[in-house]
Image (tube, rainbow, N blue to C red; front, side, top):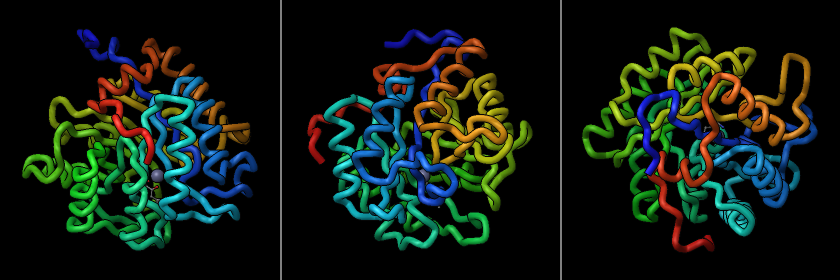
Amino acid sequence: MIAVTAWDELPVVVTVAPTGAEVTRADNPALPHSPAEIAADVIASAEAGAAVCHLHVREDDGSPSSRRELFAEAIESIRERSPIITMVSTGGAVWMPMEERMTGLEAGPDLAGVETGSMNFGEDPFVTVPADARRVIERAREQGIGLEAEMFDVGHVVAGVRMLERGELPPPLRANLVFGVPGGIDASPEALEAMVRPLPEGTHWSITAVGRHQRRMLALAILRGAGGIRVGFEDGVFLRRGVLASSNTELVADAADLIRTLGRRVASIDEARELLSCPTRVATSP
Ligand code: KMH
Ligand code: ZN
């Protein structure tokens, strides 16, 4: 058991999101595409402090994919070399039908994301109606996969909490609060408070921030007692203004430095499993 007496003693879980669906090699040539490249980045990121990986997959040409085999291959090669917690996206890409967004659930991850609402994602609609969220949750529960709610605005937080209260979303609530996506909530101290306020006691909350305020938002969240932060090419390809990150690992190492600089510590994978109530899966092959 982790004996926690104060928020500043709580270790911070670092998640790496190595690929996403929107970023391209034109944005950063180091973007991993193949399952082997994704796995290599995840393993190196785990060594730099990541305890969770949030996975999307790509075809060889870099286009976002929903093929189960690609998820399975990535997860398998990660598990061969690291106990890092694996999480699949069910957000996919804006143009993916729900059926395709759900294929990662068939690849045996530890956790899966679930969107608790709809929004504009830049210029595109990004729609998850409640019935679709319930489908994701149901399939994840059938497979023994834990859930993390992906929340891009206050309404998504409120909807997720309601689902928890109604028993539709199983406890414990793991919430990833996302800031700065055009169409979602902004990246500001006030936005952080607004997103945290509806969360019930005992929620494990982490943050993701995109855009120029990314590092400041991560710092704010670390000082506000966040249970986790997320970095990686899905969320930003720059290390600093005008400086491209050389790899996902560099972004993770930088996030780990930030956590330590602000007086907290980085959660080990074992600690993250405990904090996220995420037991090691017995069946390791997807
Ligand atoms: N690619 C975005 C449209 C998630 O993974 O849950 C959705 C996304 C969120 O990346
Ligand atoms: Zn994602």
